[in-house]
Amino acid sequence: MTNNPLQIEPRLAAIMAQEYPRFSDAEYAHRHKLLAAVMEKAGVDHLLVVTDHRVGNAPQWVTSWPGTVEAYVVFKPGVKMTMFMEWYNHFPLGKKIARDVDVQWGEHQGIQKTVAELKRRGAKRVGVMGPLAVSKWRLLEENFQMVGLDAEYIRLRTIKSEEEIDWLRIGAALSDAGLAALIDGTRVGLTERELGNMIERAWVGYGGTTMIHYIGRTSMAKPHIFVPPQHHSPRKVEKGDVIFCELSAFWWDYAGQVLRTMTVDAEPTPLYRDLYQTAEAAFDAVTKVVRHGTTMQEIVDAAGVIESAGFSVCDDLMHGFGGGYFQPIVGTKSRPAGPLPNMTLAENMTVVVQPNVITKDQSAGVQVGELIRVTKTGFERLHKAERGLFRVG
Image 1 (cartoon, rainbow, N blue to C red):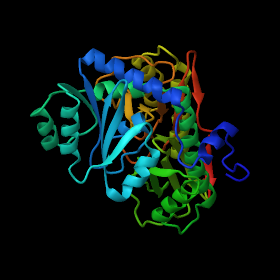
Image 2: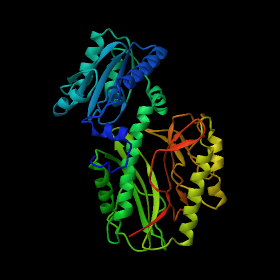
Image 3: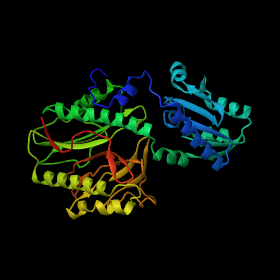
Image 4: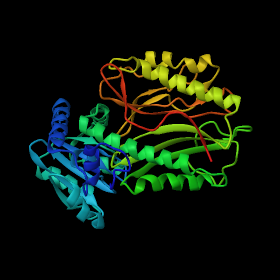
């Protein structure tokens, strides 16, 4: 972190300077209190918090350990947690990072060891947060009354604490670094794969890890894509191209998300200028109504500037973000994202507003937007990346 090249606040730089960063004891105590309330409401005596086959982030939220392969955490308020984890070469680091946990190697039979531990504790009714293969769920069900609590976990993750928001600020700064590298380094002749590599190099050196870097690249004169694809091709950047991207770097489990559009060695064509201006107008219109208590219909109505300009969208207009892809997931009048969620925005939700404005024939499109924090009276930017239609190359 020499000379603070990411230009982040000293308190955030201090978090990044830790060997393996953790939240405060008070933060974990608060999380465990929330879990205890969920358990009481569900009438369960123990909670099993799971990462299985590299899927599921609940153990990290509860213990600080990311759960690289398998992690089965047995939780009960007031009792030290037990975690069975894989693999043995991950075991030393798991013991170092996991907080206030009896960490044990699962010996490739972690679910069986978990059942034995729950029996030892006299468990009768067990709640589960996180994914489990059907065979493992059935094994648990043979011994205990099981209650799925994934919806409650998502609810707990929807409203962010101040400490979590600081970690999201770091994820945003890392994502912004990837965007800056793309803007500064894009040249005619580079492949999409090389652009992706350049983006990753910008955040990996600071401890960031890759969530996504979706990159769309096409000729403005003869466009062939309208939304950034999820995998890069060997196509090369050419003069007169437009590049539009969606970038997210993780700081542990906390990622930013920044979306921008740029042209290569050329001014935007009239179509792309119109698409871009509409996307910016939609971002401003939506964020203007964002506040504690905003309804989903207010968001859709604000985004009506897209249809008024004769365009539509492909990507979701808004989605919850930070620890997962959460509600509210909202589309527009012309491209709904399913039924409107029966909810309102709440203070300290973090959401991505991302108008991916496209032509109705799905021949061309742009990306604009970023992760924001909902406040009582409006919103706060978590990114510092400049807005605008950039010219690169």
